[in-house]
Image 1 (tube, rainbow, N blue to C red):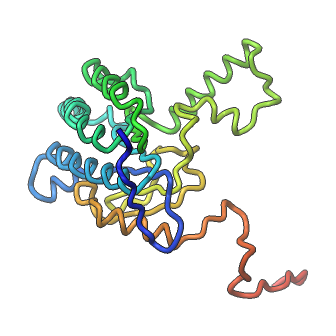
Image 2 (tube, rainbow, N blue to C red; image 1 turned 180 degrees about the vertical axis):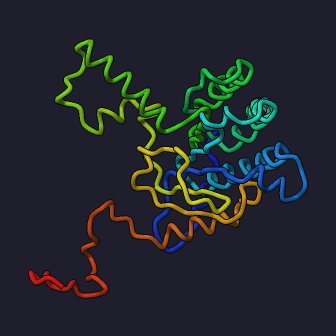
Image 3 (spheres, rainbow, N blue to C red; image 1 turned 90 degrees about the horizontal axis):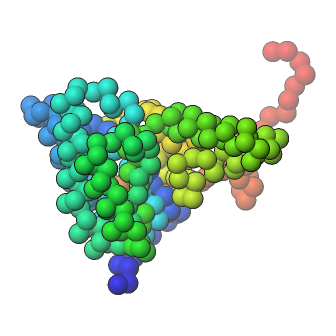
Length: 262
């Protein structure tokens, strides 16, 4: 089966190949409506479906969703149990949508921490979608960026002690090869919902040069119109990766450096 026809919008600027999302505000959305927090998580699944489908249709190569952090295990046990049941339901219920859109699902994080029934369905969905040629959807589950870096350092140090790796040859690409998923390109655009201005221990290594976009709406309200606003914002930006843009003069002259004290 050929992949769905890509309909990439022309926003007058660059288009991100990899989008990462911190899906924040599910519980807040529910509480603001007098509902139980868990109902916000259930409504958030609708946003996952719409954003995943929209990104696949527009030709995004990778979409990474921060679904459950290592810190989330500290939440009330009843909420954690519900989230794990919801994860299992999502993995089973969204298989047709993933297949229809040729989306390949994978996951990063300490996946062995997941309940057995959820992990089984995760592996089944990964296997089912393994050969899909379209967008890659990565779920960050039991994930924390500091944990990922600690795990990478642990594996790297073992290889050094075993004589497999010369410590003097270690550089950033060496460390990258020990991360959970070194093959997927770094995110170009990192979106966070619910108006929060923090990274929350998400992809700290990979998002070093990602463009940040903060949406004021909570995740259950983040749908295709809000995604298009984020993409339009990204299209207006000029990525420099710490360098200078040399194809245009600076907007203001740079004053000479004076040796005199003010």
